[in-house]
Length: 225
Image 1 (tube, rainbow, N blue to C red):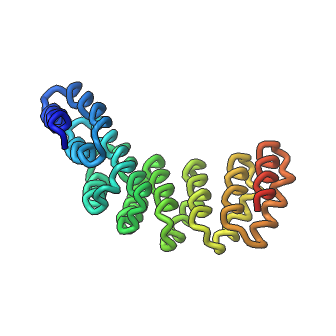
Image 2: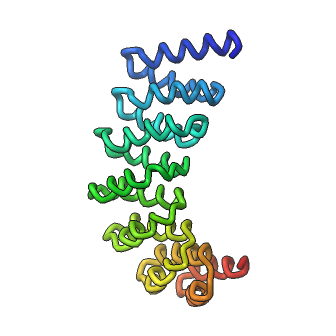
Image 3: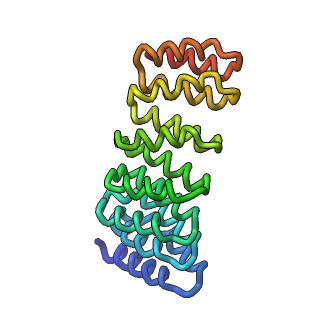
């Protein structure tokens, strides 16, 4: 680390410990200009800030740079997922665990999903499980597919597509008749991801959907198969 960079790092680290919340927020923003390793070090500090907005920002950024130390990222994100008092910070932790594909966190994500009724938190967890790509997430996603919240359901559809398990097709096919065209649109994308004869039959049906957005996008997907 050059002397100039070392000085900048030390200054920002000191500012992250300041009493003034605005100073800490500015320091977190300024840390984006640092090399990834030094930036990560400062994010770990900010992840435990007393101000929720700073924790949220830091936790979200770890999802992009945490690969420099996956074990430390797993520890910090798991901690925030479990004990942070703010639901949006916990949701950000779930999203970052998914972004970093930390499959070791699956059991924690599963427990968190089962212990909350907050749709935003559930949405983040379901999306993260899709990003993990871990086959053991199938049952949880099948459960999420029955969620009364449309956004959680859409996330489950997308994550089942990400898993690519042929067993998901039988769960998705009934939704080709869902009254919500956005559901049908997402179904077509996931069926195309999964593939297979049964999925193709669903795509051919959606290619004739009365909603142009669904029909046209499905036709484009079929052309790529």
